[in-house]
Length: 396
Image: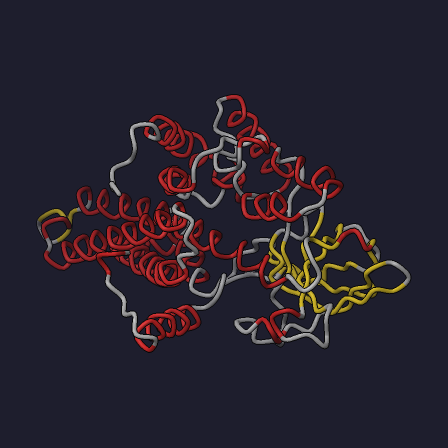
């Protein structure tokens, strides 16, 4: 594979980069204040993205998206990831959920949820994590659904259901087959958020940021039998299909954030003078630049390689596990150095670095903590040797 941005992708990547730097990033203060101003600003950005052919670029063309192949989408998503608002402004926030529904939804479910989802008319949410449960081991999930009089009745509590406070529905992973083996005991059920018994308990702040990570109580929530997504007992299969590419999407956006932090750091070093000369002349500051470049480039190569494997039809579980850990650690380190270079200003909202730092730290927990990815990846590699195959990097 080539690591160059393909000529066919360069124009759309450049257009997305310009959209992000010239329109989304300048709008961040208004978007961050919330309220009517934020909603009006986002609606304007979404309208502009649609008018300029930049909407939902990674969604399949048959769903109304841009139809970019997976690997091509990496090159676009890494510039879209420069701002946390990029996904919403460009209609890609729904990609994981859209692909999940595309594969598993019934005709009626597609009509009700999938079409408006791709057009940005409704928001999705996904409920897997539970308070009081070690959610890195999802076989411990306790939220349960039983069939009663032809309807699913759901009882339990979830949290970190992102955007539940504005979503039209939540895809809920719950225990439906209590007597089945652990990985066949769970199913996915689509629950409209206006269903009686669906109660948002709170928006859980993440490191001081209010980001719509909601705790939700399911108190005798009753939905039609037809709201089952896919087959009974296939919750883990659907979750893995959703989470694997989703982790790569995270890493793509981490690259965009790291690029922006790197830009800010280098610009600061060249413009700031201390102790008789520019900070760029100080060797300790040069070390920050060197380390950041090496880490960003390493994570980028790993991300492109993992996406390449997925593009070839491979599940790429080793590659995904590695890059999720490496990219999250990289982003933490690069943003940390950029803050250090900015000194006191880096600790304030005068730059985007303070919010980026908190999002970066959360990235080491979301979609599975580092420790789980390290353990499962190492086990897979050791299994290859235990079964006499080995692992030759040149062939991967």
